Length: 273
Image 1: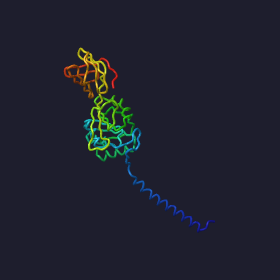
Image 2: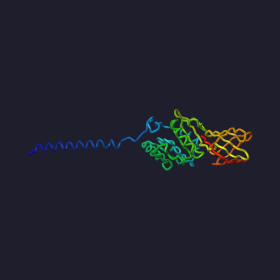
Image 3: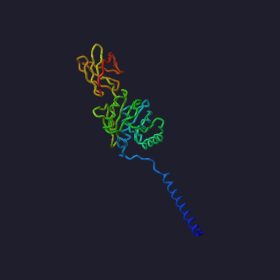
Image 4: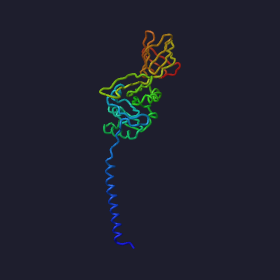
């Protein structure tokens, strides 16, 4: 038979245990409620690159060189904290950020809401190599050169005239169409831009002459009849070149080129970069 003293002692121990458990639960609850929101750290690892913030001045210069307006659809690959997407949205553009880190996606969504542009700036978790870029009129990047090179074939297959901007890093031997330094800025201050060129390499019929064009990205060379083509260049669908004393300026539309007083029809195509 258990004595009364033992019962009281057991009840006392149980009561103390319950009180201690309650105190611990109350102490733990405020810690969960006051957990700090996610804050990115420069240099933190990501899937393809480490994250480093883009200075606002560089973002502004990239968007200036690509002439972003409210008519544009901008896609930022590796959008991080969303600064480029949010800045584009403030200009009225529709902008999408593709980011692999879900914490970064949530942060960018919150910052877009705070900036009052959540209706224009959206963010998705995704792989930048698998992103659908077909709707974009502008692509922005802050990636390493080897990542840019892996993306380059996909970028060159976009609609001619699509503008591309990169913070600091190049596209290999695809020379930029424009480059500028941002100010005020101390690091990561160079904006480089490209315009996706139409594909014109091959043989064309221009009047009663044969136009043979070779293409290295936006740069052109070749012959018109037996006359060398010089100063050949593409700016999206816009084409200019000189043959002899005449300068040709026009627009490419698939298998035709048309300018003032001249037109050309493609006879065959060749590989181009």
